[in-house]
Length: 116
Image (tube, rainbow, N blue to C red; front, side):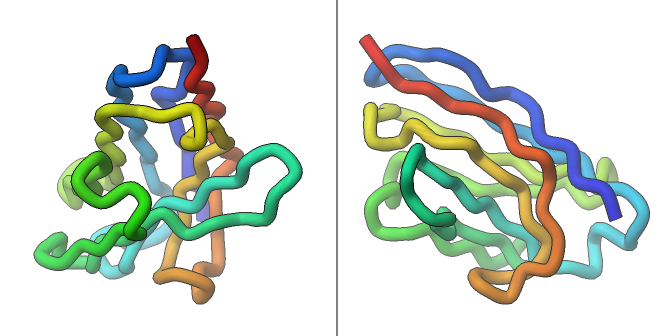
């Protein structure tokens, strides 16, 4: 199982970023997928997830209305669209296979820094 994230960077408050994660070594479309983030000095935090079919998504309250999760099973790719970014969104973002604390694999992560 390999999960490879990309798309992170340094942005200003209010900006947008789209993260991508390509999965390989497993049948991507058969698994619920999600995003986990870890801010400096804090533990991992489940950001949100999407069902294997793509028809159901859920995100944590603090990012609701700003973050959207989607997937393209034909490309084995998971996305996280982040709008109106805030400094408190600064973290390493990981793609994870599974749902909430039940994920069993995650990628190497991509750094997102929101700062003026």
